[in-house]
Length: 385
Image 1 (cartoon, one colour):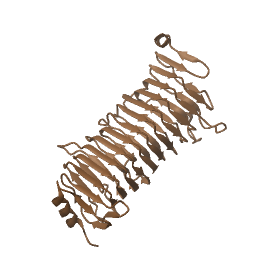
Image 2 (tube, helix red, strand yellow; image 1 turned 120 degrees about the horizontal axis):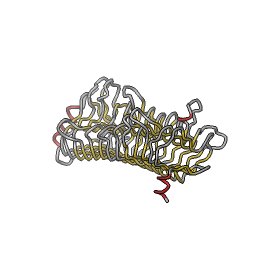
Image 3 (spheres, one colour; image 1 turned 90 degrees about the horizontal axis):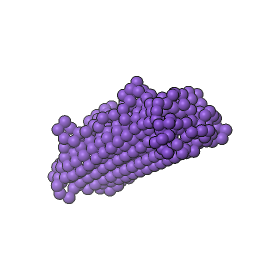
């Protein structure tokens, strides 16, 4: 094996701020990290022609961008080889204005990782039109402190679970992150996961997500987001899952999604307040007939240790189960709710039990429009008339 590390790093260092480095077709093997300095452009002949491979058992960061700005990488296949370390990735550490496009990534853990150093945030990073295959834990990871990240038009498949407790094809813990028009063909766990105190003002839109567990998970601490116009299939669990262990406000709108054939509920809400479910189409949820009924609904709402859900709107959704499937227990199931509830103008068809099931006495004010009747508090009735 010829090690190209020194040659490539010398080329990159000399090209900083100039025309950049072009790699013609070929397989370039490296046994150490490639380091891209400020104002560098690295271009291959296309991911089907130019390949950079990390030598087996190297166990080091594959490509490292550290506190350097204005970097562009395109047209290259990155093959992570056979490694043990999760650090084997394209690491973007505290950089501004970085573009990764039309690349391919295979045999990697945390394939593209955007994060902030102790002294400098990562900002204005774009990962688009790239292909990820044979990935462990995360294809694209945006960690705490990163902001203004765009993840768009990527294709992700074969994301397997290893060390991470909650792996996902796309993992977001940074602020102002947009995840748009990506295709996740298969993920052992989650398609898009957004969580943590830094996960503010996020947009998950127009993605096609095919997962084993959850399509989109919005977890404890995340706030100020939109989950819209996605197509979601989840084999074993939920299409969309909003969860907060402390019962905080999520300020999230889930709208216009098409959610089909979920093993459990189409949308599962646990311990969050201040959310809206508007204009979603949920078809044949609860296909795992061995699960309890509160996990086999179109929309299921419950509590965590932090408290019950409150201040939410569920309107203009279409929630149906195919005749004869005997899968969906209820279209909307309320196991807990703490007032300021509006459930109205939904199309609810095919539930085994009540279309809207209340397993709790809802605090005022509330307005619940079911097939059979309108259930409301006087206070809320006065507000809506």
